[in-house]
Image 1 (tube, rainbow, N blue to C red):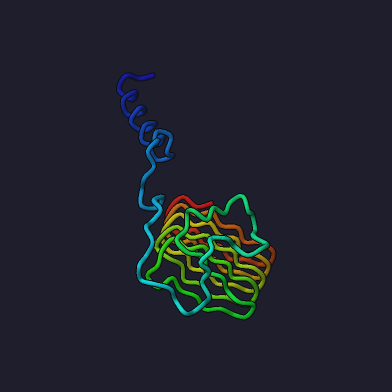
Image 2: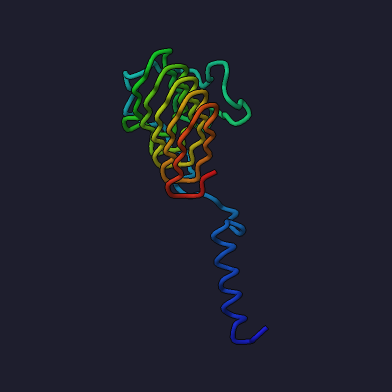
Amino acid sequence: MDPVLAPFMLLFLGTLSLDLGLFNNNDDTPEDAVPAADPAGASDTAPITDAATPPSGVADPDEFDATLYTEVVNGTDGANDLSAEGRSALAWFLVDGDDSLDGSLGNDYVEGGAGDDSMNLRDGRDLAYGGAGDDSIDAGIGFDTVFGGDGTDTLIGNGGNDV
């Protein structure tokens, strides 16, 4: 290798490895940090459970960890228009119906259920399952994982490392 190119190659490989997160053992970025409970209170747009357990039928129970979320929001069988309204780190279970969701700025978990759902997940490290129906999921900014489910789905990654 040419001695003039060697330092540039090492710089490039080092930058690439940092970008891939190969040397990041202390991952405490705002996208990863679990926010504290929001004192703003609950929204009256959907019932909120005090229990940190989702309804039966969670898309992948191994992925849901109730300790990572400040609240669990359960939708109804009809169409729901839901918003985080200042709260963060929410677990959303939309059930059936054509639902509209405006997620939080924290790390959200969303299970869309059946119906043509529209989800805007915003910031944070979000995990979303669209479910059956023609869903539109905008993952927002952050390191998100999104599964469309059955139907013709539109998935938008936006910024961050999305899967």
